[in-house]
Image (cartoon, rainbow, N blue to C red):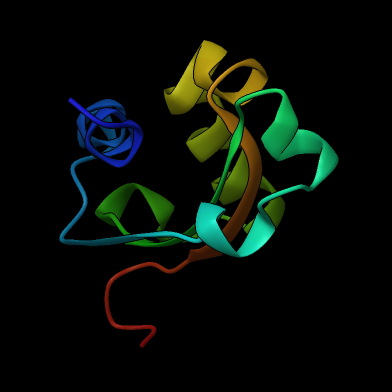
Amino acid sequence: MNVAQRIEQRLASLRPESLEILDESGRHVGHEGAKGGGGHFRLTIVPPEFTGKPVQQRHRMVYDALGPMMKTEIHALAIQAYAPGEI
């Protein structure tokens, strides 16, 4: 299982209606974070749990779901977090 698949598996706890993970690690070859093995990812997620929550809380929920991956396998994560009906 690759890192993007593990991200998807961990984010399943948020029950997303829509989830898109883009691995941009290839664009960052030679970058300091890439040297340590951490990847660069772009994430768009739309779970009902985000309804009524501010952006910062939504991001915190994503970080909490990813847990230790944020310190090992993920160096950079660009997050677009929406509640259903916002996009």
